[in-house]
Image 1 (tube, rainbow, N blue to C red):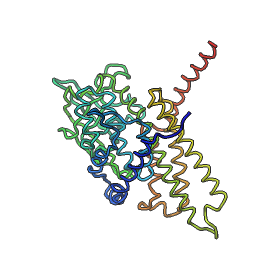
Image 2 (cartoon, rainbow, N blue to C red):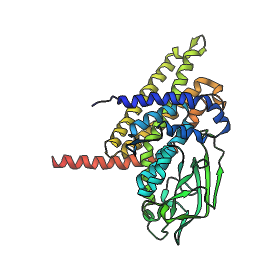
Image 3 (spheres, rainbow, N blue to C red):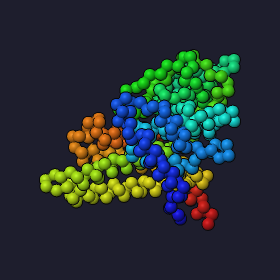
Image 4 (cartoon, helix red, strand yellow):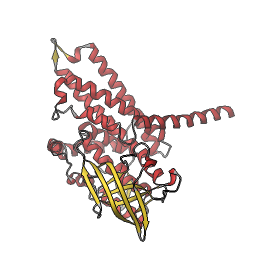
Length: 390
């Protein structure tokens, strides 16, 4: 079993670190104050090849998820808020088109998405539907030449800056719950679209936006995937995105840990450095061990996905472990800074807040436990069947 990261991936990661040092870190404070990520940042990411796709002989190919996870983890150490904005565009929006778009949709959308020239998000959650995706109430009425959409999408990351949203809506109200929804590629400049930025305090400087759809016409060619399969499609998008959001959340934990450990080595209390107290050194050792363990589970999941294996169980375990870890590390690090940690401008402030946000994206912790239990029982049933035959 080889745990070595391919040399090409490490070289790509080093290039990414240099990119962030030039194009992100000098401007991050201003972005935080303004609460917005400039569109130019995405085009620069795309020009440098950091938006999830590689062009080979004129053909776009998705980058291996391990390669994406490495850079997403690093971005999470610097700014989880910028990290989630990149993730939504790549792992939710562009990924949904890659998974379910037809040839024309992929040809029209993926090249500009890979260059950061056109941004995509997903509009799914509603006032009465979050974890229970099948409870979505937005309506899609079939009309000549297309569909008319009405409804509200409550919490859409990148909703204010995106050009298109992958929107779920009820296309077949009389069908069973599993076949009521369809997915649509909605031009957010369409008549009838109203976007309202929400005043959130996590994952800054990315936006969280309410999108209201009032008699929005969507042409037939913008039906994404198969009519009546919207539920299955959005859940598959989330399954894929759990891998990269786990990397982002791991980066959130690592960023907080490094700040906390550095501060503990500098701050003196009662005549000794904080890190010299055995209680604190043992806490650091415990958290570092958990970081290493969570990273190994994540890398195993990346290997499963990149090698074409079933990665559903690993994706949910990774999400569950990294969220618990980021919560624990974020609180530990903030405590080391004392009162300074509650000041918005302080570097440590964002990490416990963003760990909280990570627990909500791509399914809450309870949702992950439901998936883990379901997939675990399948594996145990397979194990029992194989033993009975031997």
